[in-house]
Each structure stands twice: as structure tokens, then as C-alpha cells.
Amino acid sequence: MSIKVISGHQVFNENAVVLSQKNKWTLEKEFNPQANDLYIVFGAHELAHQLLEIQYRKNSSFGYVILNSEQIHSQFFKNKYYIQLMKRNVVCDYNTLTCDYLRQNFDVKVFSYYHFEFMKFPEEQQRIYDVCFIGSKNQHREETLNKLQDQFPNLKFYIDLEWKHGSSDSLTKILSQCKVVLNMPFYQDNALETHRINKALACGCQVVSTFSKDKDADDFYKDYIYFADDLERGIIYQQESKVPKKSYEELVKALNQKISPHFLFVIDQVHKKLISLSNTNDVLPQDTNVSQQTSSNTDQNACENTSNQVGK
Image (cartoon, rainbow, N blue to C red):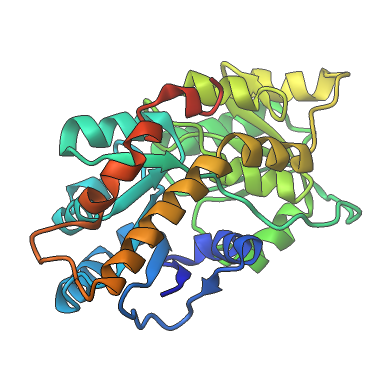
């Protein structure tokens, strides 16, 4: 009857390590669920079918907290197994846009927010690249990056659109050699891509970003990164700015104060529910979900309560 953390994709491995160490939860490397255990899952969209199948097979005797990281235009929301997995379990999200989208389009309730925390790395290493972008390829990104290189011929760019740095160690190594990281959305109507931002700040980089559609998040992050209507203006703004942005340590402290208390409250309530089922020698019937069993205890502080939103 313990709380465990698992990662369904290597890009979230560092987040899983930090979350487990911070809260003294077990980091599960070989997934073998036991009755009444609670599994906090990063990257569940990659494992939806497997996670759902084993929960059915074990008669819902354990629960998941799904940390959704997909944005509203993600192809994974067309995956019926991922939607069903979220409907049967407790879901947390990192942004308000997806929270509303899941409720309105799939009747998936988001119980709380979470944030991406990374290990802080020394900043003393020589930084040989002026500007960096690492992310998936699309036409908008390719055209924008080509234009920026033409506009700033004196700056040394490092660009990876092929995910050569999928592992945390590889990504940390290259980011530690970069001065500025660009945050450029993959989707239109995007949430602020805080996974990229937080990792860059943890590696001592400055971040230049376009505004997102999540005004609350933009307002919250304006003290930590450089926002502009386009990246050309953002780079100029960062180069000319005389006012330093707040540190990664200050960001983590602010996020922990604003988001973590309610997130941990939800985790505690779900875990208590699983323990109570164990004490009564009961299990959840196949047509009942962990989300429903937890709702009555968490509704008063659920995601819909906008007083808990980032930036409010």
C-alpha cells in the first residue's frame, strides 16, 4: 500500500526521479502493480493500452494518477485507450487550457495541477552556443529558425529537430553549453511549454519565448523568462535587457508554494481511498473508476476552482 512513480517516456525520467525523491515515494523501474498501490504516471499517453489492460486484469485493485502532458491538438487524444485510462483514474495537468478541453470534450475531470521540476545543474561551464532550440520538427519551426539564423548571423545557433538528445543526461550536456534557449510552440493555440522552459532554466540558460494562449501562465512566468510577440524581438529584448530575470531556484519555490499543496492533497486523498478499500477487504468493481471514488473528497479543491490556477 505505497505510492510509486513511473515514467512512460525517457523525456520525463528526470521529473519522475525528482518527484519521487522529494516526496520519498518509490521510483518504480519494473512495473509490477500490487493491490492498493497508487502509481503516479508521467507519459501515460505512451503506455495507455498497457496501463489500462493491467488495471482491468487486476480488477482495479490499484490506482493511477495520470499526469497529462499532452496539449489540446495532440494526436494522443484520438487514442481511445488513453481517454478511457483518464476517465477511469485521477488526472492532473500542467496547464489550464487542457484542463478545460478535457472536461468539455471528453468529460474527463482534472483534479489538480502539477509542475515539471528538474535537478539544478552548475552554471560555470563555458557556453559556446548563443542560441539553442531542441524540439520536434514542423514547417513553422523550420522556417522560423532559418529566418532567425539569417537575421542574426553573428550568433552561434545549436538546432536539433530530430530529438538527438532524448535522454536527460544528453539534454543536460548540450543545454549547459547554451546561453539562450528558444521556446517555440509546436501547436497553434498552445499552452506555455513549461517542460522545455523549466529544464532550460535548471541548466542555467536564459529563455526567450513567444506568448502562449494561457495568459495566467504567461503572467506567472514573465519574471523568469523573456516574452515577445515573435522570437526575433525576443532575442533583441534579451540582449538589451538590463534587468535580470529571477532564478530557477526562485521559480521552483514559487511553483511549490502555489501548486504542490493541492497536488499533494489530491494524492493523499486517493491513497487513503485505496487503503480504506483494503481495510474493508473490498475492490473497485470493473465498471467503477478511481476518479469517481475520489471525487467526493476532492471536489471542493478541484481544478475547476480557479483560485488554484497558475498565475491567478
